[in-house]
Image 1 (cartoon, rainbow, N blue to C red):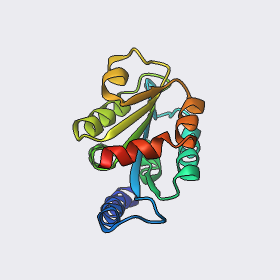
Image 2: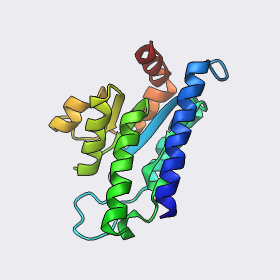
Image 3: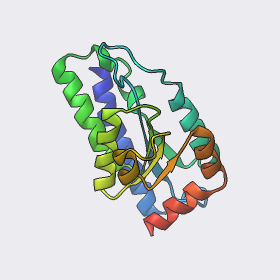
Image 4: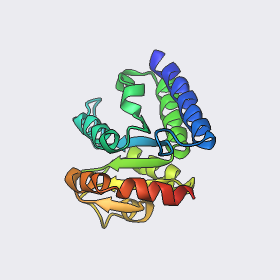
Length: 175
């Protein structure tokens, strides 16, 4: 249950970052929030998870260029989520969907079809947030129509961030 409480703390942190955004720039650049969406269970029929190391790589890519970014990671908020009972899992899932809709940017990692990621992408898109997807499935309708931009792999996304395009896109979207 502690992880679910942490989600409330994370929502408070997101609100805090939004207050800072309205109060002005930090280190010359306005802060922004990023939700790391991505495959967890995928199509596994049991409680096993896909490797989650991509989350650290995405965080490192984003914060290397944008230390002002507040990165929200649902796997960190709920590290034992596959062991939650039904009600705890429902609260965690619904809370993560709310976070996806509240952050400024959602970065989705979908090397395979992932229903949770698709729902998070939809919530962010419907809320008018930026959605950047790393996936080889560029013709998949959820990927294609819910994303502002699709990257074939992490290296493409890294170049986008490193070249300043993430920052420029976030700034243009905020204005």
